[in-house]
Amino acid sequence: MLGTLNDAARLTRLSTESGSDGSSPTAPDRSHRPDVVLTLMTTWNVAAKRGFSFSEDRLALALLDENRARRVLICDSTRNGLRKFAGTLRGRKEEAFPERSFATHHAPVRLGRPNPRSLERIQRAYASYERGIRDAAARQGLDRPFVITANPFVAGFADFSWAAPVTYYAWDDWEAYEPLQKWWPLYAQAFECLRQRRRRVVMVGEEGIRRIRPTGPYAVVPNGIDPAEWQRLPPPPAWYADAPRPRLLYLGSLASRVDTQQLRCLASAFPTGSITLVGALTDRAHFESVRHIPNITFHPPVTRREIPGLVAHADVGLIPHRLTRFTEAISRPLKVYEYLAAGVPVAAVATHAGLAGLSDRVTIIEPGGDMAAAVRSALALDPQPESDRLRFVAEHGWEERFDALLNVAFAK
Image 1: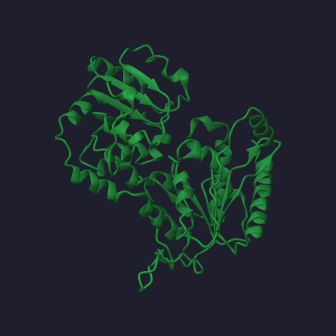
Image 2: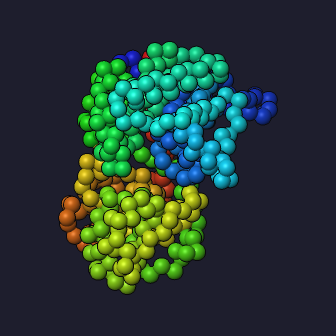
Image 3: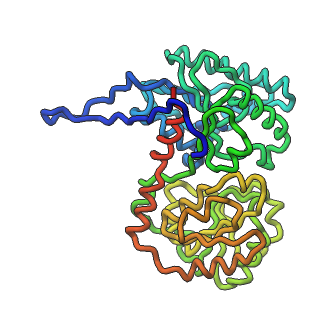
């Protein structure tokens, strides 16, 4: 943690207790819990479709734990109403929000662009967005709820004078995310407003905190894993079971952050092995130079159920990222936790500052260094004892991460 909190109160967890006569557990008493509003960078439907893989998705699930809050309002980002209607006409199915007596879902739509590109228009858009949240909170009976948002425009431009303090959960540096480059100046404006309002900030990496420069309470809370997913490792998906060895795996978005020169070098260094890239191909042109290489395979995203078996079947987990402003901001990407949770050694380029201290099973090279040498070093490591793997799984769960986040968000 980089910052200190004045009068910070540890978040205590209520547990259900059985009666002294051996009766069944009673429902938790949430009367002393805070009310909470969470606004997503995307939507509940998107989070569900991607298997609740991202940090904001996991936080949404955590807030639906009946022990964490009295009442919860989870808010989608604003969607284009015409596009949503067109999707409905085409039979596109929306993922239903789970039924909870204490939780509701707010899914606003508008006819225009959800994120305009002028400062005046985007400020009006988010003032309107906030009014919708205020009305939804009033209908649910929320009493001065604490607000957590994964959207920097909400954190900066929305007022929330009717609510308790606002915390910005920054799980990516959107001001450096190339697909959103048209909005970078507006993100900078939002962060300036965030500082003026002394909003709280929780970031997954220290570099991101330095860039945002919060004036209110702040903390670094790394990414994590769901221990339940990694207790017992299943067999690999059928399509990966016979991949040639060594099996080198990259799991994540296939975008410009991936260094294709490193991929070419690995393909040459391990001609009888396999390099498998699993994820959404968001920048097809970036990978044109390697798509013809026989031992490099592109595979679309897989379900959460498939990921543990897929990763466990690999010989080395790859993080062949380019050094960019975006990769620097995230000290430990989600994928490194998933590789290590499966007991798989990691070969990584030193674009993420926090990798060096995470595990001795992470071999790191400097940008432009010899990735093949890092892979050979990873392959030479002794197999990890199962007890060590399970200890890593237990030490890096989302529950503890979100306890730390809520310590900041709920502090008086």
